[in-house]
Length: 233
Image (tube, rainbow, N blue to C red; front, side):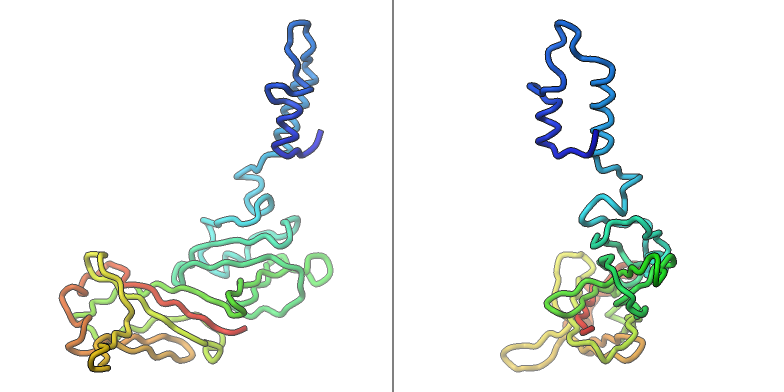
């Protein structure tokens, strides 16, 4: 009795399986049924027991930041598993569990609480895209009609590694999406806004009298859009 592929289970226990023949002569024994139950138990992905160990990629609903990611017990977890979670302020994050003794460097490298240089040298590494890392941050509340600037904490340990930032703005009706940087092709004038960042925040500014200085962008208790940051390791 062991873990089986679907094709193996079919061959053993399917409609023409070798282990469960037609029972006209009592060939199916209690032992056969126990073997079936054990093989299914060994082969299935259990949503409770195997949340961190049995899949190539898993969404973690209970994790909201690197602190709660660190708290996951990694002893016995399958190496190279990829996990996804929604950061409470920074949007979707994806990490891979790998062997390593890298020093912690948030958010790029996260050392689990149960890290041990000898017995459990594993770390979570933020996944890279095209050689760089990428994260997405919610803008959150921003009444662009009455307020021309919005600052959002980026959570990066080294802002000088940032290589590009893009910002998508949506209107109150959630029907029109566009870049914060709006340049009219006929005049070259910027009618959208600008992006500035420092060691702590990304600051967005909309142009006075521009596209977003409008009652179509004044709703509150509403995520105004998203910031995508690409940064080098």
